[in-house]
Image 1: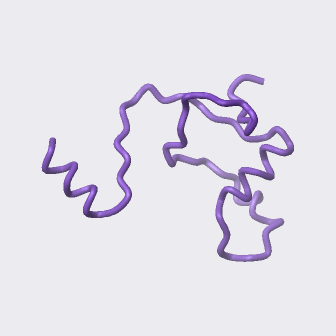
Image 2: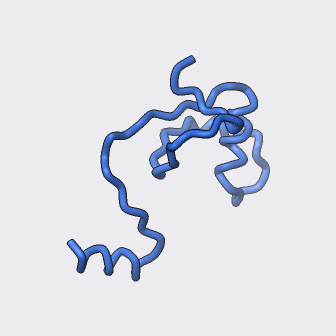
Image 3: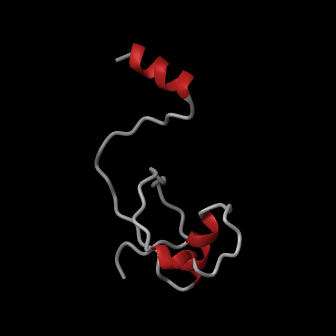
Length: 74
């Protein structure tokens, strides 16, 4: 199916940080703190993770210092 995410396929796309997740996906996880990549991996294994290409330009902001520097360079 179109837009299905697979780990073994190399492409030019990156994750931008936007997710819409059904909270029932967390039912199988006992820990309250865990990387969301565990949920992604489970969904990839059962062919249920999808992605959509954005045509927007993104800047990577890792912390407040980077954010402030980007604001100055507008």
